[in-house]
Length: 119
Image (cartoon, rainbow, N blue to C red; front, side, top):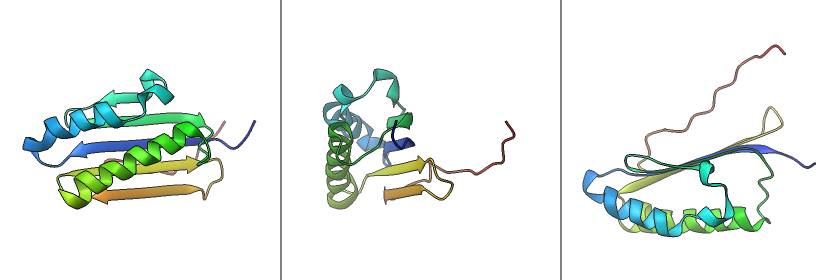
């Protein structure tokens, strides 16, 4: 069966005049072919990605393609021309397995919340 995670990413422009170029870049560079269409949502200023109960192993081609796209996005829009942000959250099966990465002048659009659930 393997270890499963929930993964969310947000890519968004921080400047209104850059929304068009950021969204165009995302349309051309996000790995849409490696994931279900429903995993992506176009937003007012970028894209959101969310998958639940997925094997998120760095050796998997779909995961690798996402990391490559994210790294390029960060270099272009967060480092060279800081006009956008990228946020990544992965929650694993273990209670203490949470990975959070934020790049650029982010707005904390992705958060993690713990709660107690009775089944």
